Image (cartoon, rainbow over all chains, first blue to last red; front, side):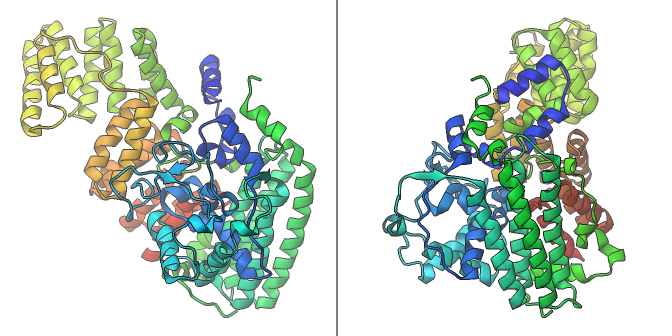
Length: 316
Length: 314
């Protein structure tokens, strides 16, 4: 694909910003795999989920955080990586590959100095990306241990240069991971379809988490959740970039701005939690309408295996 | 409402949101921004935007494409095409030492020795340690019968050899000296110019930066720049490493060079903002933040980080 683009640039003889503006909008996942088959799978499939959801907004917060690039900092955050990039559905990722960080697909050196400004080592020592649901094969089987807390803190703040998560985010992450066990999975090793619906779950998670954080007056968590929800909206913006519709693009951007506004309103002293919850309910309604409209165009997005395949294999 | 304050940085951020709009309105009221849908851009590394290596984003940037076109032309002996390509690169970034050097080489390859002199001199003006440029400039002076000037190049190489001790450049310096003396023909492309090598050097450089080894980072970045040309990711980190070493004027030059090629480069905009914070120009830092927030319509780490810097300095 890259070669094809280069050829066009050379043949035309001049630089075409529009050409590359298109590519800039492509799903970020494309950069984390080294072949078209793996890219196609990442866009259209995901491992079977082994998480038993809880009716607890902290669980929703944890699942959103696990999928949020805003949890990590440094190079990982700049690349748009989240925990779920290596562990989609909280599992493993046998195709993940970043040049210089991986020696072969499914392996990564997360202690590389490239990723961490204060926790890296001098060795190139990629390791297999573990299946987080395969509890028996993990170092920490009991996720209530203090050692598990320390591991989580180390991963976020040291290995991936993230900011210290709020207490609620940290608790939510633990709750999500605790619910992730291969014993809960009916089809543990079979992939399932990745769809708008499956990714939209994170927006629903965000709304539940926002409601909870607003009621608790936890502004730092509101900040994190709204930033994470904006990152999910960016994902849709990218997934629908192959056949873009301006009105949908505009609404995704409007929703992103609305989330930012919600944040501003939250800290205004003259707004009560009840008033902010009314705004949140309006936002939720708008998001529901947006979801319906996105669903109408799902076949033209990267969620559709045929559309994604045609993009990734332009010569076929 | 009653706000719980969880972390220092977040507290500062929220304090910022409470400030009068007249002072930092553009940070706090993002919803007021009018962001056209086509204003969204990913930006590049040197701090990110979805690309993990310069080779992946290289084709986005005209000077980088032209630079690589020039390298390919030099490799196949097409010096005229190489000359045209490097002239285009230099028209965007005249201070890119490697581009000046390769322009000199492409002219040298056409036996335009007098014309080759100037780009070799400029290459050395911007990077006096570019050993091969000393060698070729010495040969140019020999060929144009400016023997005293050739001797001056020889002398500079000897000084470089003495100051470098057992450095990696020693063999290269000896070869350049032999070249001036007419005893050895230098290879036109002494470096490994594969994109893989360029990426490797870039990752090495960022790893050095993350460890605070800024001089080592600059060495890797210079080599990476010799592969990619004036790539904004590389220029951004050249600025960053120079800033950390206290070379603020040089840092500013690199940031501006990066932004000259990609005005929406997230990393360059972020680090330029940090530079402004460091020199006490919070007004300009806030301008950079405003720009980043416009570039990152869905939020980004670069804007978050610069926001933290400004909040900490306010």
